[in-house]
Amino acid sequence: MRSLHARRISRGAGLRLALALVALAATTVGAGALHAASAPGWRVGEAAEVALSLSPNDQEMIAAAGAQVARRLGLPGLAATTTRALDRTLQRTLDTVELRGIDGRLAAVLTRDATSGRLRSAVRLAWMPDLDVPRLDAAGAVGAAVIFLAGAGWPAPASTPTSGWDDGMRAWQVRWPRLIAGIAAPTDGLVAWIHRGGQLKALAITESPLAPAPATTIAPEVALASVRGYLRRTGIASMADLTVLDPVMRWAEANDFVDPSLPDAPAPALRLAWVVHLSYLPPGWTERHEVELAVDAGTGELIGGTESA
Image (cartoon, rainbow, N blue to C red; front, side, top):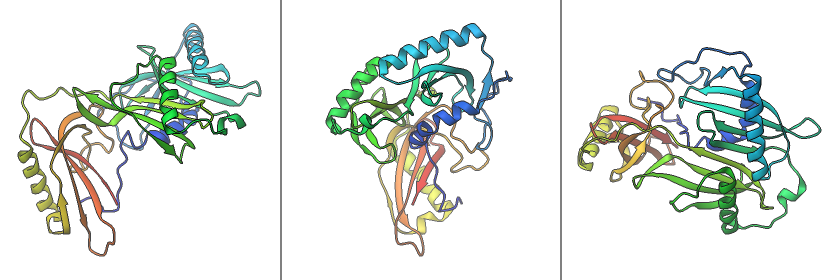
């Protein structure tokens, strides 16, 4: 049984950290051309990106396109460095454009899909006092975010956004969850961070590949039975004050939570699943342990989960 102290961080939960480190990640991709590797079997600790070569003409075109997007978003700096890499975790080739100020310091970083040219993320790194002049509240941040989405070439999603202050980013966060045929994919979505002054701090979109939806889906009671079998096998069923909620259908990540032989990282494609949330009080603990288990909506197989304390 997995340690109760472990904490699995999903792609969605890790998005804030990924944005904060995007500039560093862009500079760690090697300049040499390497053979692209496939995502199956990729494990945590291995290189998540493989550098690909770019001709001088391609570099110039990508830099020019990135600079245009940066201007629409009000991001500072001039395009200085362009790289291309294969993201092994999502099997997507990405172009990264670094923008630098006249002092040579990194001012902003944009990442675009190399195939479609669509913006995937943008982050402002250069700071100026006007960014922190309070001009917006949470509601105003939503309106500003919609404008920036248009500048990025992203239509505002049909889903209703949430907004609130993000202490980690020191900005307003506006998030639109991803809905697929009306079913939520919690690890995915579109997020904008807006400075107090109304300027863009960062944008990011996560759209994981999808496994085909099953032709027929199992009843929630079947998924619940699968979960209860797992709880008996692991001894969780005997834990104090065990609470198991009704299954909810979502697009979920498959991972090694219930099968350590699988890769440590979540599988690239999301699968339609019944997700069951449960909590209990481990011996000697004063706070409840929270767990979510995902059951494939077609086969009834346990495919993954998350835990936190």
